[in-house]
Picture 1 (cartoon, rainbow, N blue to C red):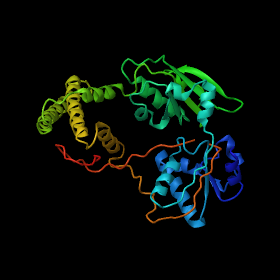
Picture 2: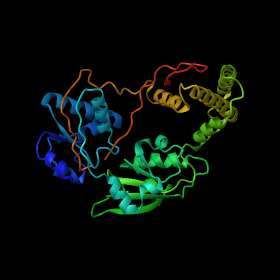
Picture 3: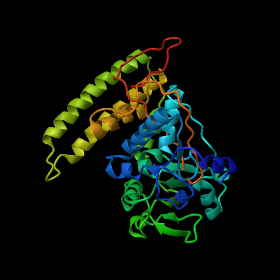
Picture 4: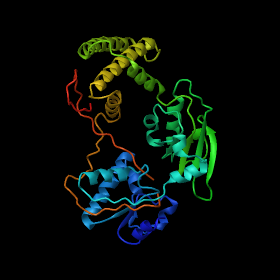
Amino acid sequence: MPPLVRDRLGSGRWWLRTRRHPAASEVSALGSFDSFYDDSDTFEHTYERIAAALIAEATEHGAVGYAVPGSALVLERTVELLGEAARRGEIDLEVLPAMSFLDLAWAALGVDPVTAGVRLVDGHRFATDAAGERGPLLVAHTHARAVLSDIKLAVLDQPTSDPDGEVHVLHHLGLDDQRVSVTTWADLDRGDEPDHLTTLWVPHLNVPVAASIQGLAEAVAGEQPHRPEVAEASALGAELRASADAVSHSLAAFDLDSGDGADRLCDALGRELGGVARAARLAERAGWFSLAEIADVAAADVTAGKPAPQSASRPTRPVPRSFWPGRNPWPAVVSPSPAPSPWRQHVGRRPGRRRRRC
């Protein structure tokens, strides 16, 4: 534990993100936020509640410390939310340095992450964060069998994926029972019970996650425009209207029980998706939005029917208070996606135009 952190832990009001960690006993804390994990619907809701509670505590008492496992700047969503509040001028934030689980992982694996070009991925968002990646990947937040199953399916759902591909399970790094075991994608969720000290090492993927979508994006990006932008947009509009009609007719003829019409519907949806990808590429060249941003809107619509309620728990009044998350016992940082604004279509370039999100 760094001396600065140890000195800070000796005084003040401290809260733990969780007591479910071997180093939690080193902190004399008022309490933890374990109950938030138990009664929140999603992890994002948990982290938003923790951030709001800490800001309220700082507002009432003038200063509060927040101790997390490992480094506060490695996959610590609550710390990122607090950082956003600090940038809005609602709090003063000081982050103290500490060793993360990453150092233990590199030592156990014998890997130089810079030379190897390792990508760190959040297991809760593996299907999106690892999209297009072939490895090596270090996957954190793999604390439950259900998370391992989701990661496994994200890999094995790809065409020509290898169920016998190698994946390493890092368990209890830095403790007496530390071990690194090798398994396959097929057996990933069938081994020992994972916990909050479990991490995955993926040296290589023979097929990237979301390979088909990545391939579509790369194919569209490689197309050279053959017409002026206005003409291109007009042609795409006609193409999308025709493909939408084809999707409508194919859906009407599709029999879910027998599968009759499935090939026709798949082809129609594929043509529609291709048109969407080309329209997104046109908008991206003009500086407005990209295919990834369209996917963000679609994901928000599918999962909630509306943008994620990230702002619901944020205070509306400034809270200029001293706030110093402490460290050592613990990991890290993830970026939130801004809430999408209504979709707008723009064609043609204008000097000095700023990029907009859809």
